[in-house]
Structures are given as C-alpha cells and as structure tokens.
Length: 169
Image 1: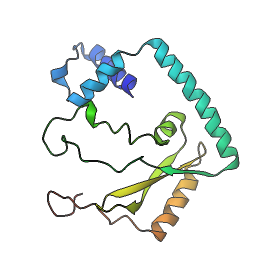
Image 2: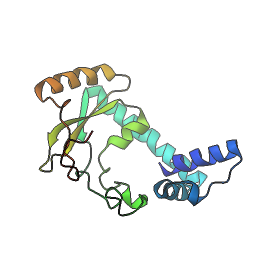
Image 3: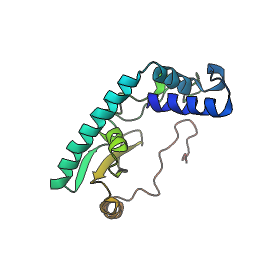
C-alpha cells in the first residue's frame, strides 16, 4: 500500500513537473508516501515474490472449497480523533491492527471477495463477514449475497450517528 501511494504521487509529479511536498497532501497521504519512499526495489520484488507464492497457495484451497469465510476486520471500527475533528487524519488513523484478517490478500491475489454486514454490535455498527471465491467465480458470491440478504436483510439498515442522533448515510 505504501509503495503504491509513493508510486502514484511520483508518477503524477513526473507527469505534471511538480515536486511533491507535505503541504500539498493530507497528512495521512503524505505519511503513506514517506513510508513508501523508504522501501527499496529489493523490498518490492520480495513482496511480489511472496504474493505470488501466497496466490498459488490460495488457488490450491479453492480446488477443494467454494467459499472462504473470514471476518472483514479483526475489531470493530474505532472513532479516531480525526473523525471528531480534533486533528487532521494521519498515519495513526490507518486501521492496521484491524486489517489483520485476510481481505487485503484477496486484493493482491485477485480472488473476488465481498463483505456482508451480517451482524451489528452494541453501538449499532455493522460487523462485516467476508466471503471470497475462486478466481473468476464472482457468480458464486452474487448468489450467496442474494441468499444472505434474504435471510438477514441489511440494505435499509444504517448505523446511527452518535453526534447527530439521527441516521447517517
């Protein structure tokens, strides 16, 4: 992620002839950029090698199973100081601990995946359940989503805004 952010900013800097600087970006984006610029070409190639190995392992899983079930996040979303307006968002707001489940790997390996809000916590925040399918098998996920929506409807359900006391959309 940080490598992609650095690449995107450097690409546009080259296209526009402008020099990236902190004052031109939100603090969170700039923090990701700085982290990305500290990675080497070797770091990048090692990561690609690891992702290719993992993609092959995941493909093997889907030889036997149709769907991979996992939590979407490791913990419910937390309110950050940035969301309350107490400060500008920055790298502290990245939910890296919450991202420990497997969903980022499907972004990298190409398996279709969906997060479905099947549960709601005591604060009326949706808790996602993630389903992934074999490469190219989006149809299985669409059928599953339709069945789950029928069993546990969520389309009209919205978390309540604690600040406004009304539905937030």
